[in-house]
Length: 451
View 1 (spheres, rainbow, N blue to C red):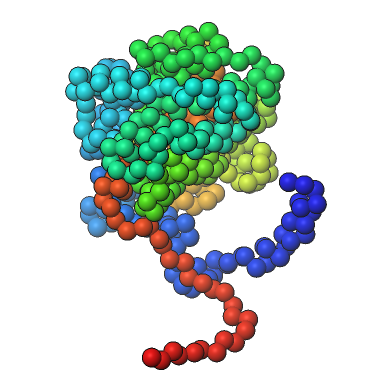
View 2: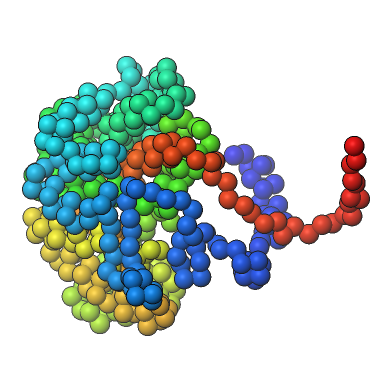
C-alpha cells in the first residue's frame, strides 16, 4: 500500500468508526446475540451433526450445571481414542478415518488408508519451486492458503462436488498439508532468515506426525516419544464441533455449492486469526514475558503478584487477559488439556524441562482462582489446550511460525468431514439474517404497483 493511499485511509478512519459502530444497547434492544452466542456464552444452534460433540454443562436435571468438559468423536470420547491409538500407533490416521467415514478402521482398512495417504503425499512437478518458493513469507498460513488455491489449477475436476470427488480431494489435501507447511517454512527461513533450505521428501512408511518432523528437521531424525506426543497433539486438534469458527466457515462456503479448494482456503483464513488457531502464540508471548519478569519461578507468591498485575492490565500487553485460561465452551475443564497434560509431562522430563513445566503448573494452579475472584466468572475457569501446546512445540524445536499451520494439519480432517456431511445433507445455503439499524436520511415515496 502506498503512503498516499494509507494517509487517505488514516484520514477516513474516524468517519468509519463513527458510522460503523453499533452499540451493545441496540443488540439488547433487538435481542440479537453477538457472535451467535447468548448472554451466557452458549452457542445458538445453527445446524445438526453426527461428527462430534462438545459438552461442558449437565442439563439432565433441568438445571444448567458446569461439568468437566467432554469431547466426543463419532460416539467415542477423546480420552478413549487417544489411549487406544497411542498403544497401536498411527493415531492421526486412525482418527482421521473415524471422523471422515464414521467408523473405526480395521487393521486392514487402516493399512489401506495409510497407503492411500502415502500415495497422495506428492505435489505437482515443480510446484515447490514455482509456487511455494516463489513468494515466501513469515505468515506460513497465507503461504499454505495460496498453495491450496493453486492446487485447484492442477485438478481437472476441481469444481466437481460429487461425493467421491470431494473425498478424493479431501484425502489429497490431508496428505499434502504437512508438506505445504514444512516446505513453506523452509522457503521463508532460507530467503528471509538467510538460513539453509531442506526439502526432504516424505517417507511412505512414516506416520503423518513422523513425516512432519522428518521434513522439518535438517537431519530428518526424531525420537519415538517426540512422534507420539505430536501424534496426540494432532488428534486433539483434529475436530471440535461444527460451531467453531473455521469449521462453520467450511460449512457456510460448502453450502453455497463452492469447490473443495475454496472451502478449505476460507477455513484456513478463519483459523489463522488470533482469536482462533493463533491463540497458542499469545500464550508463548505471555510466557516469554513472565520468564523475564518473574525472578523466582518457584515462588508462587511472586508468580501470583505478577499474574494479578496482568489481570489489572498493568503488564505484558495490558489487555487484562491471562492467555491459555478459559474457553468459550468449556467450564470446569478442557478435556483436550486433561489428556495432553500427561504427554507434556513425559516430554518435559525427556527434554529436561522440568523447571519450565513447574512454572506452567504454578500458573495453571494460580490463574483460575485469580480470574474467578477478579472477573466473577460464573462457569468456572480452567486451562485450555492452547496453554500447553506451544510449550510442547517448543520442546519439539518447532518454530513458532508453524504453530498455527500445525493446527491446520490436524483440523483439515474435521473440515473435510463437515464438508462431506454438508454436501450429503444437501440443505439450504447458510444465510443468517442481519437486522438493519440504519437511520433513514431521506424520505422515500412508497409506490404501489398495480396490474
